[in-house]
Image (tube, rainbow, N blue to C red):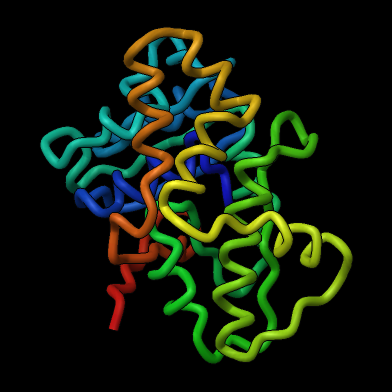
Length: 218
């Protein structure tokens, strides 16, 4: 599951900093209700890029510090990311993927017979940074013997950035990257953080709706 700007990047960082799990919701009201029922839950996410009134955290990677999220579950409702997490609910395994942990995700998929990569996109439409991240995963899986199936996988593979510099240029130059940067310096810093490649050496699998399973790189 991929939502580079910013859900899967922020949640990967949150889980790396000790968050106990992620509970994705379609509506902000559901996330708030979950937070109000459970003592160890934080309401998190955004609408149109900005924190939702009443939420504990927005969707910035820099908000998910160890001091804030360690031991907490995150009731997460975002414009695009939470939707794709819910759509993957019936999958045998669900991994959060972004540029920041791409290598760890590929390692975690070693030996998996079938892999489906879901891109959140922007309101269900094509989104360059998500497709390019999917392409990077495809390229790295292909180098380990995987075969691409379908036109979507082949298109994504063709978009795969080859270097850290290409990742940064692509993310910052994407439509959503430009939109977020237009909101101010704090958002521009978020975009730069989401453009880091392989900065986190773990992949996180959502086991059920409440537990996160950490998979360090071998």
